[in-house]
Image (cartoon, rainbow, N blue to C red; front, side):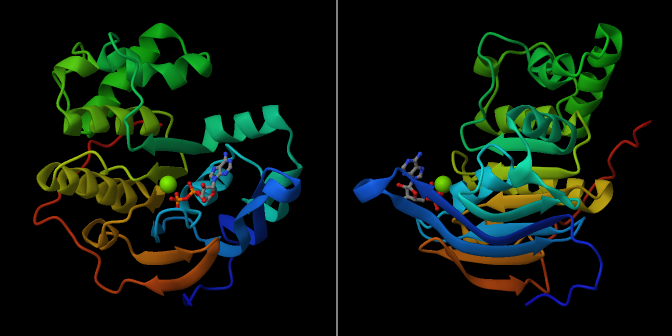
Length: 251
Ligand SMILES: Nc1ncnc2c1ncn2[C@@H]1O[C@H](COP(=O)(O)OP(=O)(O)O)[C@@H](O)[C@H]1O
Ligand SMILES: [Mg+2]
């Protein structure tokens, strides 16, 4: 149990279920999940393979709808929104980072980061500047014109994080963001996420199966068999020895 003050949570799941298939092949990946997340929290989601972590993250990210139960985001009932409304919510409030980076090949780092801004209809000049600033935020100033194939795995994930934060989302959802990286690169990514959480106030929900990575979060939620098995505060989250300040952003 967290000692949450009685304020409206940013995110609230109530008895959320997710059933795949129907009839005799129906499979309940989520079996009644209750979760409240306050703005500014950094939450790690752990649990064995197949326990429903990605399913939960997809529901939280409005990529998928619950089969039953309620999902409120800033008080809005997400389960009542149609596909277009959910897309709008995603575009304006959420950023995503995946294990496999999901960058466009043969496309520069700058253009990859600009993509979400194109969907928003931002003029080119403004877009280039915002994307370059986001790349600088993740330590990739000078790498704007390199394509993913010319970057290391750690650098590619940092481009993906720049793409996720360029829209200044309220929430960053990350599904095993260090799953394809070695330990040193993983620690760099975690230090970056921790800084974005602390200095920008971005709420982070991160799936990981690595205890060392979960240790960076302020709270660890364990899934088991489609349910939350435990939900605990981490009193001493890992901190990088030196966390350089982020460039302050206008707007
Ligand atoms: N699209 C789908 N159709 C059918 N079953 C699915 C689908 N997605 C996930 N599942 C099943 O739901 C369970 C939970 O999956 P998932 O949330 O991906 O687990 P985790 O991320 O914890 O490894 C697994 O048994 C998986 O096989
Ligand atoms: Mg998964």
